[in-house]
Image 1 (cartoon, rainbow, N blue to C red):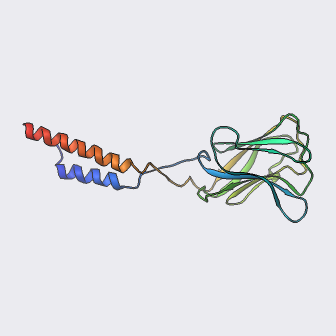
Image 2 (cartoon, rainbow, N blue to C red):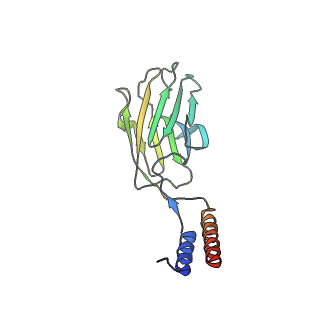
Image 3 (tube, one colour):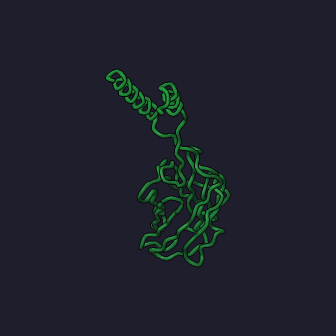
Length: 192
């Protein structure tokens, strides 16, 4: 037995106007800012910034030290942050803090709960990777690295990502499909 048209219409209307969402479990597609920070004394100085970037494929940030000309890149993929020191790098200028900060620009990424080093040289320890609710920090001060070295870090979150709305036109598409179905059903009834 077919459901009455009124039940079908009510179900379609309910679906069309429900807030439809999809969950994201990565940093991909999120907006962040990456700053190189330097703290020679009590003041933390932003030396360079990426501006707002949307995390996606490829390198999100490249920094070249003004004094030593050492260069590193930051690539974010899923929940993995990879820092690569380019072949001519030997060491960044000494300071209390000399490294980078990744910031949740829009405040939509769930609170960071961990920032752990997965692979690096022996002088890189988890003490050099710190975080707060909206920022991830990696301090190169006091750490030794070799040219071409990569550091991989894993980001942990408090909760799954907030829902990402599906395209706004989806309810209209569903309503249109329902209307076409209703017209087809009515034509069949009139024809019989």
